[in-house]
Image (cartoon, rainbow, N blue to C red; front, side):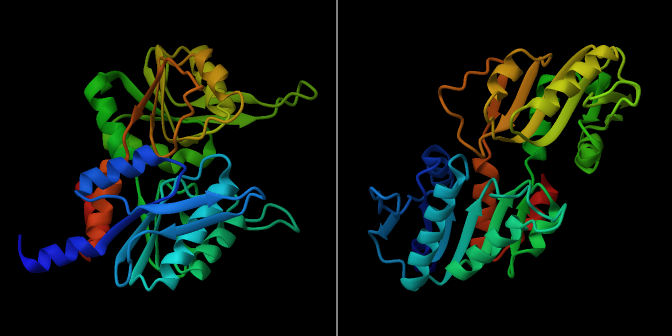
Amino acid sequence: MSDLHKKDIKHLMLFAGRSHPHLATEIADLLGTKLVPSRTVTYANSEIYVRFEESVRGCDAFVIQAHTAPVNDWLMEQLVMVDALKRASAKRITVVSPFYPYARQDKKHAGREPISARLVADMFRVAGATRVMSVDLHASQIQGFFDGPVDHLYGLPILADYVRENYDIDNFVVVSPDAGRVRMADMWSDRLGCPLAIIHKRRDPSVANTVSVHEVVGEVEGKTCLLVDDMIDTAGTICLAAEALKVHGAGKVIAAATHPVLSGPAADRLNRSAFEEVIVTNTLPIDPKVQIEKMTVLSIAPLIAKAIKEVFRDGSVAALMNDQ
């Protein structure tokens, strides 16, 4: 190993918050480095303190944090870490946020509402971040909220490769659970070479106080239907979509989503659902108490590790995504 290479490795430094240590350690192992040790304390009044135990002067810093519940605690911890790195003279600071916090608050639907996703981007910038890296942003325009480079990674290749290896896709239909996810479903359809169907939700005008009727646009009878989404939160939408597909004659229904938020009744709903399998990645940690027998969790760490390596080497993250 050349002296220059030794110097380069020394100056790529990985830092991790406390929300998802398993993912951070896996990324570090893939990069052949270690997480920088730190002293992190949550005081009795809930304030957070961070101090890194090694010099970070001149380093290319990557700060990994998964924004699971409680989101505000982990967001504040990451901001404090970025501020500490800035004040300790890190050369570049990249926020690695596999699941971008407040991503669903990306625009105003009514007066007197915030655009919280923009606020988060502003906080990262003010804290000292020079770059943001995330996976499957809920809305693409979030890339424009941060005044600097944003690396938008996609979990689709990891999920799609698993589907291709474990299912006969000749009888497959990719299904969007609502109109808002059609673009994502179209990308899946192109990747797998399968037809596309869409579930359209509308209110039933003939019955008072009903929530909606699920209409399926596309041929699903006798098919294996793959419902795709960027996240599964309470699982209400995707489970109702699975039921609608079964009503319309689908043979099997599986689901694929990048982010397993899994709030509240999600586990119970998925366990009682019509799904044969639910496939997710580990962008967020899954509480050991949440037991979902039909869930498969794939690692996002190889993708993030490759992207970090490209950023550090001033390579092309876009080329990395095109190669997948």
